[in-house]
Image 1: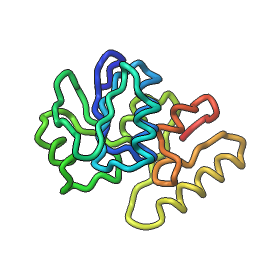
Image 2: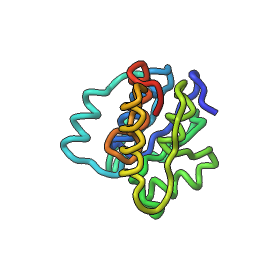
Image 3: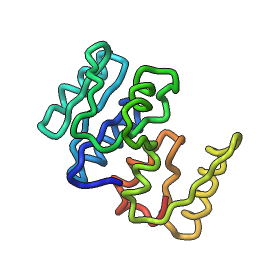
Length: 160
């Protein structure tokens, strides 16, 4: 599903959205990034990231076109009732999470932990155990360290 020649749309420019953008660029993928917010931090980020491979649209200036795009990567903070989520649903394009995007690119083994309660604690404990036996493991996902960031730095880890 992920092509080094395709264009993707990233919804949300929080921690995981920015990391997904960097991961896509590192693989030669062109990115259109959309965020409903338009604050000083995002404006500064967008001005630093200007390049032919990146189009960033913020706040009320969003053009909900998906022309020449093959995939939408949704950040976990995007509300299902938001205009971005409604755009993704109506686009007809495949929509995946930032974690799935990074997992498809990763060349390292992954351990996935799901559930209702205790995921962060279990994730951090699992990484601690793996690191204590000599494996270089990242506790990534909903821990403040996105899987895309871990995959960007994959040479530092044996597993995620």
